[in-house]
Length: 128
Image (cartoon, rainbow, N blue to C red; front, side, top):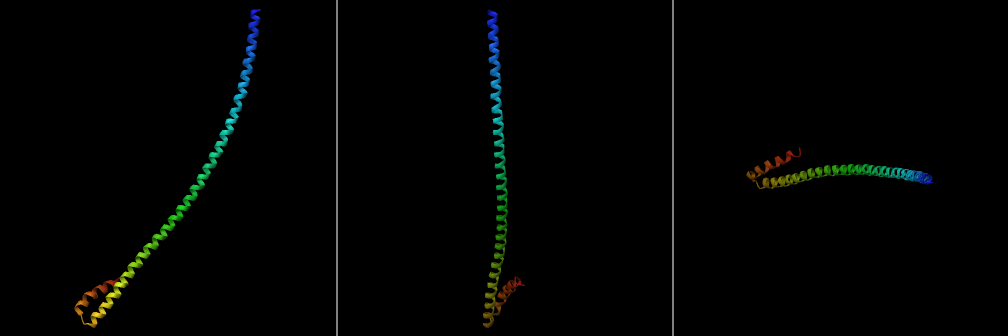
């Protein structure tokens, strides 16, 4: 009777162990498929974010190129403006020097006019 009872307990325990293993097996397979779908969703989300970042980087690069082009144009304009201002200053000095030469010639101040004549010839070099 004791061996039958132990045999019965062992059979009962085997049944419980078997059902526990089966329930554990089916319970652990659900999270795996759920984990896989979560991982796929995360990967797709990450891919979308990377594509957005790449688009923004391209847009930023184009914007930087436009800004650099604008800066180059402004730099050229500044250089031309500086050249024009310098030429206008020299022209102003030349006009003043010629006027002074005319006045000195009227007053027959030839000695002082000689120095001024050298300055006029120096200034005319810039306009030839």
